[in-house]
Amino acid sequence: MGDAVKVQRKHVLAAGVAVVATAVVAVGTGFGFADTTAARPSACPGSVTFSAEGGEPAATSDRFPVGTRLRVTNLDNGKAATVTVSGPSGSCVLLNAAAMDLVREPGKNVIRRNVVERLDDGAASPARPGAQPGETRPGDARPGAGAARPPAASACTGAITFSAEGGAPAATSGQFPVGTRLRVTNLDNNKVVTVTVTGPSGSCVLLNAAAMDLIREPGKNLVRRNTVELLR
Image (tube, rainbow, N blue to C red):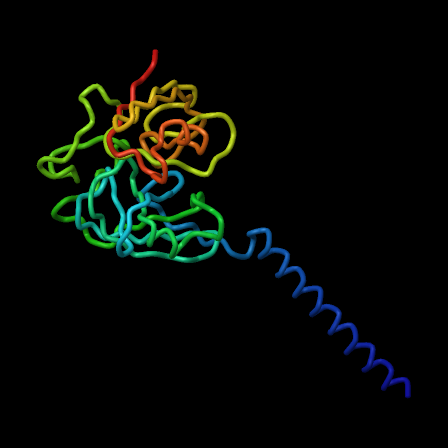
């Protein structure tokens, strides 16, 4: 009888140790100790947002030339969209409506945690690692002949869009430091908003919702013809 009790106690002790070990592994994984895989490097900094452009999933960019294939992954839900750059914009990558629908979370118009990967080798038109959003050089995506261009005095090139950020009119930028004051003019209706840069983004200038409401035309989420002025 004594031997049977000792064996039973050993089994109970072993089972207890196994449970504790499993719990330790689970806790370690939850806090990031067990999974040390580094995030993939992203070709674009900051948040990803979208325009009201229709059609098949696509994107515009101020960094990659037309025809470049990109994969955009939303790290919050694991969803990914593969898109081809179809033209210029004021962002490193600006998705159209169909592409955004493939990766967005319900009710969200901006993807803060993301990875943008270039799928081609870039041999013909390499991405410029040190390029600033809004900067253009020969060979970069640009409007076709006859397309409206912003005046030479504009501090940013391409279309302007917005994030779902609330609060007073403001903007984020991948080109100007926090505290910079900018005046943005919609050349289609001559409406103007003055904003202060409050943080980084993947755009030369990305307005928040309140700022966009001051200059947008009804039903439009994109200001194609614009001027961005740096206020001293």
